[in-house]
Image (tube, rainbow, N blue to C red):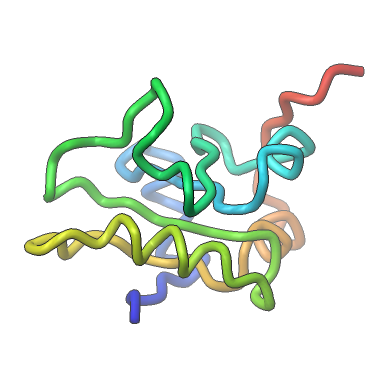
Length: 111
């Protein structure tokens, strides 16, 4: 099982750009709002899109979902965990917790 990261552990690396954030719900949720700098990937599409995930096995990657009841983040994290990787983490409580704490989000939704 993937190691969990808390919001307080996650906030500083997101702000400094030291972590790759992977938004695991479907793209329509990403369009509505996501953590700044996040990329959108579902389990079946982890490695298949033109904008690739880092090849470095030492890159810190954090997956998240919408809420803690969503299992997409674990499915994506499992796909990302390759032998030798130690930096895949899961923000289990998801973007809902991020927003409630007053943290910023980005949207790609067209008005």
